[in-house]
Image (cartoon, rainbow, N blue to C red; front, top):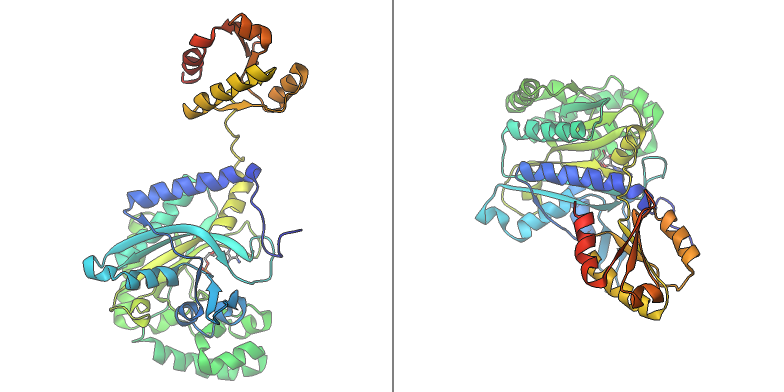
Length: 418
Ligand code: AMP
């Protein structure tokens, strides 16, 4: 049996970088006032179709959708924002305190073509803020990402930012865009032609080379913003500048989800080949209302956890696991029983202790202690029990001392808690 294409195991040898990133991220989120939220892995298909947009790659081609036994259409979550918005509305959070900050870490599912940095089950670290319209929040989130990457020691990342406008300025932009696209019709793929009527903005996100060439000089939302959106974007830029966050204004950045309004951004790296986006986010001021809640401004981002770890693997050594403190060698049935109790007690005290229950010889078990790189070995055979003198061997210096059973545990705690 093998994993399904695009799905993979993250093995224990690799996990410490994942843990390091998650620890750093959650620590930072907490200092910015975010609270953890956990959301289901499966939701009604309609939730994603309505929020991400019917005419997007994710909804048209990439979702894992199935009917359950009752015929309900369900989908493995391809992203977290839609579910968090659903939760915000379902629990009427807006009524008690409309301003909420959430983070979550977990797997997402998209049936994309797998390659390095692109998987069908991948992980995201996600943060969302509800209830604040101010442009300072946009900058604050980009600042937060910048801080996180700095703390992880990453360089060579750049923040690309753009403004996608709002329902006020978008219709007139769409007209200008459609006029332009009409003149390039011959060069566009079938998918783009189909999207012309339904969702022309998506054409700007097509990955096919011919289409990319055709739209290279397409009009940009940034040049067609209303005054409010323009002021908003200027404030974001200024606030980033004053905090010393480098950014690139990227007029061609549109992101692959329909719900974005105003500021959208991506953190890109040059070191991952085609899969250059390590994180992406944006404002979605219309989504809470669209899904049945009151008008509530909101904004968020998702970090591609797999990609972030891949970038870190290029610069960071996988941290060494902590060494084993003690390996217990119990020879004979009575010693095995004693050893079992000692190991339980020491593990409970937080001392990294292992015992081998297979009844192997002293020689075999010393080899095992070496393999596990144990700092100390405790040797208890029939004689040691009769004489109440258990041997403690320092594997580094090869020195041995004997301990009475009464003093042994406190003695060991003293050694290891130093
Ligand atoms: P999105 O939810 O599309 O805005 O993506 C946010 C981030 O998730 C991207 O910048 C990527 O780093 C990561 N990501 C998206 N799709 C995948 C995938 N199929 N495999 C790995 N990472 C992904």
